[in-house]
Image (cartoon, rainbow, N blue to C red; front, side, top):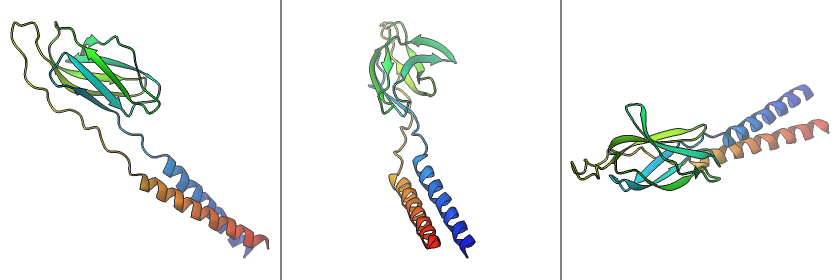
Length: 164
């Protein structure tokens, strides 16, 4: 009988620990990037879902070739977010992949820079932006924590009964 109680308590303790660990190990949010206003050579770039306190490199890429590197130093905050106003030289125009990269995360959106040389007029509107994603549902994590705590309490109860 004591052997069964010890086995039951050990299984419950392991189950509780696993549930709590999995609740805290939820997926990292997906990085997102937004540029506004559309179709401008001066615009705000905001990003989220990046690693905290890292340098972000912004660049315009066309046909897998970097066309322009922004030289502004941009750092993510403690939550992995950043915001910057960037200026594209008037000599650069067209539709590009606006790419934001850190040491571990890279994301891009399509962005159109208008022709401001006055020779051919403005290019068309931009394409759709990337989906910023949705926030994780915290109730899933809380459920795992609750079940883990119940399993730990039951295992402590079983061990206390065993020692009597």
